[in-house]
Image 1 (cartoon, rainbow, N blue to C red):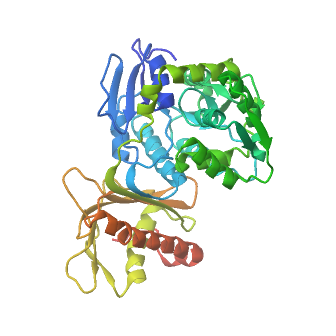
Image 2: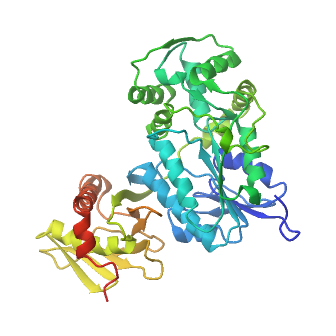
Length: 478
């Protein structure tokens, strides 16, 4: 990476307060100005060459502001941990929104390159949810004009993070380890320092634009072998017994309970361990792919750092504060040739048909909608179409009133429809919605009804794609 016009390049780092982001920022700020992006920056202070910006990547407007002035951007985000008091939806669908907002913002702000830390994608007929999501995010980032470099890594060995600390906890807490069949699967661990080196060398390297690069350390090992080496490094004698009937479903529960790690994090990771995660030589680049630090050395360094900095690590592992709001995200299949705007308009027409004779939809004008019970004059939810923030592949409605919604200054509850690039799938999402009714009552009434409605909408769209395509026009109504 070279200086731009004799000035220090400006690099935006998403997830700057996370495990990879913190370590990468320490290295990059030696020769670049950093825009450190994080959802919550209340405890962060700017320093020389580092400027913190609050950024909720579920908001396209936030993403655009966050990347303003950036030459390059690093995408280190995954959405396995919830950020709302109530989250309905799969992490894969939330990852779609985050990646699409980031890619749109990077294009709008004319960022020169996006570097994405992904996972090694094995050759398999069916990938795990976690790896499928990584690949889908990669494809979404590449769907816009900004060049993308994807660094694909397997198990990253470092003092925090996810995979290696889970493995270390298993070794530490279990004198006798009952190992499932998947622990015989080969993987390609890589030290944190080698990953940081790969990411740094990729920034601004035009020969790597729009490429996916596998990286790995000098050792290819089974998970059982890694556990054995880790126990040696810890100085603990451990006994291992392989049990072939220990399924992945049972394994993920066992790992979560044994290590005390949230299911939302453990389950997708364990499901991925059935795949061999070994770097493909055909996707390697000299100086980028070939990690130098052995697994044993990386494990020793990781465990040493854990002991030195245990108190601050525990503080960083505390879950981020969540606001009293709701996020609900579902994926639906739409007719070929249709877009997000069509899906939004069709949903507004379809909803009262589903709920009749109990609910009516009132249209003030083309951009204002009100949902009200048939026996009341007051609306229980009001939606305002945002013409300036919408386009064919993204339709946005703000929740602007109604008996069921709290609408205060600064709050931005919204309903959006977003088409996934190069597919016939659409994400329908409610963001930052604050219910007016008591939380416990809301959770078991309105929230349940919304999820039921979305499941019915999904089934309805999938039932007769041809009829919908022929019966409803693509162009907006006048």
